[in-house]
Length: 155
Image (spheres, helix red, strand yellow):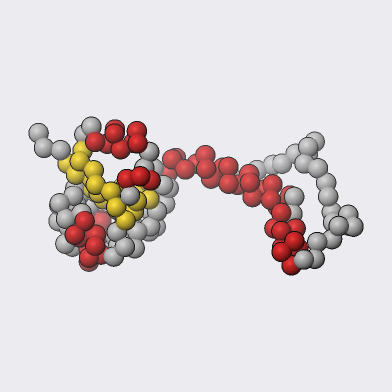
């Protein structure tokens, strides 16, 4: 039975976890590279069944997909689908898939980091240092985070 072929179009293989590459190659052929324009994408993924990407890819446009008749699915590692040609995929019967939970931990970590930066005035103090206007008199508002409560509202 012939394996199907996946083209990772937004990263070289060295950027992918080795275990991920090994697992994929158990059931599919995998090629990896960064496609920067539609022509490059057509040459790179001309015989592929699935196009895989991280985030948006500037090469993934309807005119490229018109020249890739073997492609049956678009797969985006990450949460959003807004950067994919959804209308084209729908009218041409392409499956569109993503992994919304795959980055939830990173998003949560980033949100906490931004909260700490806000609470500790990191941006303001960094700007002062770079302007050479650091106020060392202690007049900046300073308070500790320990003993305080933070309420998060969201989904």
